[in-house]
Length: 267
Image (cartoon, rainbow, N blue to C red; front, side):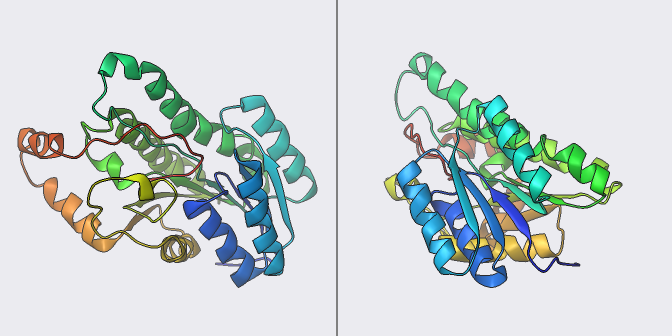
């Protein structure tokens, strides 16, 4: 894939987890010009400082991805002066019923959909028409392996990640004709501030820097789907060979995820 001398890359949810790891990866490997956002100003600026120390021009801005107007204004202003080569819609929150009364979980479910679905749309759509006009650019949506099955312990999370996965895969087909490439990433468990709170086994969990390296390699090859780790991908693929009712019974036994609010993805 042809690369500019300095790529302009925007990453949401960059204050920790996969977002932070991707920012550090591109700062170190490419000295890319980075535009980072997240909801925690202190942590975001710490990440930006690390990127600058690695030789990257890095600009941070604390924005909630659910704020459609603010995201549009910020992204369009950046793209007018330094056209974006890669936009990574990474911000997301995780949560489940956590053993609570489902009726009391309504507000949490709404917030999960706001961030995980609306937040993605608010990130990619301000730049799509600009990339189409330029006939160049790359978009990345962070979904999850949780999108591959209905998780009773985290219904809003798995459903919201499934929504962006289907949306991204369909949109990728349309945008490819305009020489704009979109990838959907479905990671398994990744070490982050969010997963460290999980009180259940997390098979095949990967460090965030390893996850970032896998994602970056997949993006370099313009893959529409980037699933990892391979062991989790294999397990989820095998479940699709089983009767749906049996699969639902299996995932109904999955541990509950307690409601968590952070601007980073988790499985």
